[in-house]
Length: 231
Image (cartoon, rainbow, N blue to C red):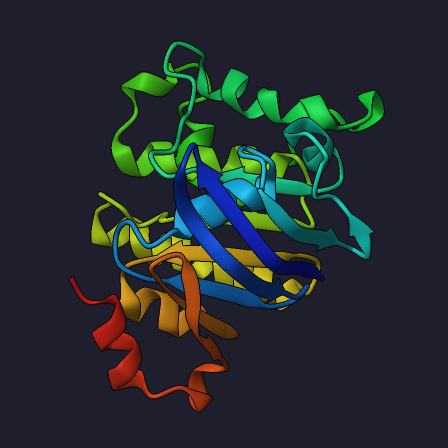
């Protein structure tokens, strides 16, 4: 389980997170919803170690990782698919996937055949540069790169942003499959309510740097959630 307890985060003098608490459990998809600028990405940056917190505690699998650098969290099984994908445009698809090897022992540094079952388009493009792929293909590559790391916590920051509907459906099916295996916790940040609601085991809604709603989808008022996340 991931446990975020009373986390405060600043960018200089600006307060981005206010005493935020959140959990994400193995075998479940926790969806973090909210309008632009409310702190969703800042919370992910705190969890993955991309930005230090001002106070509070982050626990992963019972261990305090609050002060660990980003690469140490990756070694502990935390993988992230950032907003905007951040693939390496001049590296080939194969080379992009192989960057996920960095946190694995030498004997485990192999691209699993399953990656090409999940993302068959990538198998036909292994020698193509990442920057030559479409936005949807780059998103699939970014998710596959994270999965090559064999994570136990997968953090996805708006994976549907700028993606064509057919690819969105494919990504949804992959997230469902990963959840059903019960081997990892998935933390999904989204603005597309219907996509998130269909996948969520738990929903948390952010506003002004804090969690204002948190619970199982069946226990939350759907109209209230939609109102809080609509632009």
